[in-house]
Image 1 (tube, rainbow over the protein chains, first blue to last red):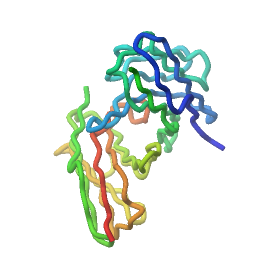
Image 2: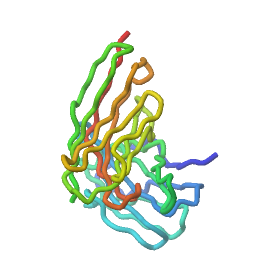
Image 3: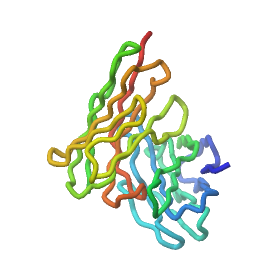
Image 4: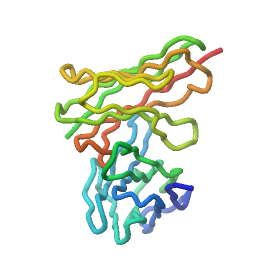
Length: 114
Length: 113
């Protein structure tokens, strides 16, 4: 089954404790992105990657890191989480070429930083 | 960068009525405009999209219109059903792909019986 898988689904952590949210896709998509969703603000892009070892900042990159060492994986790293990073996070992947450039989203990770 | 505004933030319609959600974008170079539906507790899913070389696109009860001159696009849902109740997001892209989407703030649609 074609899918984007995020882990964990839920995470409660303390301020300053490094964490990683994993994202994996099995559709051989070139593009991958991370978004955060906050009430009243919609989805805002954190980082995106257009290929292996190619990443770029989105609209709200502060406090986050990413890496793209393999095509299928795109982990999101919070080196020192703060309460303002409490949010619902979505990973997405999409094709580079073709008529169907739909972004497929993972199931989401709800992060709470206390 | 691109900025997308979406209205209304909430919309309540009776079953069978039509619903219209409107978005405006700031960068005239944007060329790809998808719409996503997010049911409660679920992930966003694409329902329809349109590219800048097309003025209108329809898929059964859903249609999207694009006015490049005015820089706005709209989602039209006809004959609404209770299962249409969800949050709808518009988005715009400068790349023609879904690599870098700028989303609107969402519209919560409630279809009442």
